Length: 385
Ligand code: NZQ
Ligand code: ZN
Image (cartoon, rainbow, N blue to C red; front, side):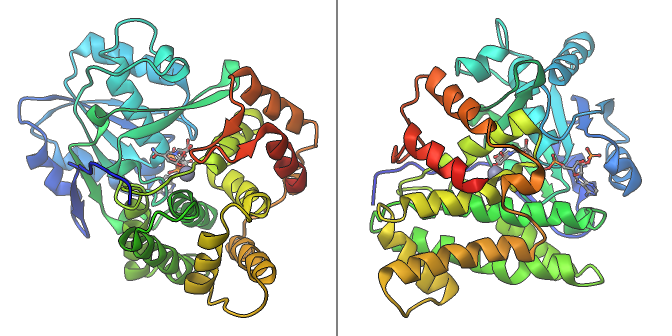
């Protein structure tokens, strides 16, 4: 196992009727900015529940954060914060709202152009405190300190992060997710699944605790995911299990002491930046072919994943690895997610643009393992067509 420091300070408030508890989590004298998306929270009662909980606080609001949150929208929120002397941010919505709120928090205290936080990875030295009410189980943003921001005019989608951006608290009420369209729930299952894979399906570092935590999350997503999509009525327990699995998938626990990758995400972000595909869809497209391309380098973990998660124990190593990858792809299909670029009307000319983009950033290999060269990347994307 590799050395690590693990510290996750986020207070999780989980369960039914929990939004009212935020009243005690936000300082009484705070000037609070509630940040939300395109209006789902107004239709499902979450907006009203937050307003009610904070009747005794000085509350401002900023709506209109887009899916794949946009830099320029975040900058408008920063202006409001400066104008109204806001000192606490409350994100209410999906991962996009949470990520935007983190970026707004850092940007409102940043000296210089906040785009440098994304493009130049300029360090974040100060940030406004924030809390969250998450309404979409997927990203894990509610219990981590990172985010992703899109800038449409440059067709970029870039990551940022800082320990200063851990939420002070996050409310996880599975009931807030009942209004989600089924395809968003499916996206959430796939995103959480691939988060685990990015931290697990790499090289062995002899870390059985992390491996078995990761496998328990994958098995839970395989069992509970479909119950949330195919069953007629919403099932509280299935939704609660999905929500907790998604949070645990990306809160730093399973990545401690092991090799992480994130190549699937890095490639997927470019597909969203160029084509606007949903984040989870890009992952479902890239992961199977990325595994096929790197299977010999990751053989030990791939065989372990096949055996422990998909119960694949017979056949040659080659056969077991291919069956493991196709089972994973079938799982994405079973959730209603297509896994080929052509099925989203994306033509092969995107491949060179993506490869050139990594090249122009001076990257000769992709991901934490550095086992995917730009030539490999081209092969992977060609196989994704
Ligand atoms: O904007 P509103 O009206 O709220 O609608 C949203 C949005 O249209 C809707 N929605 C959310 N909760 C709902 C709901 N609709 C009905 N009922 C509810 N309870 O769902 C749509 C998608 O929301 P969004 O927040 O964009 O989805 P998600 O949570 O999947 O977040 C995706 C973003 O997170 C980033 C992605 O790159 C993408 O930008 N990620 C963030 C990560 C992190 N912070 O750690 C890691 C991930 O890998 C990911 O990259
Ligand atoms: Zn993701």
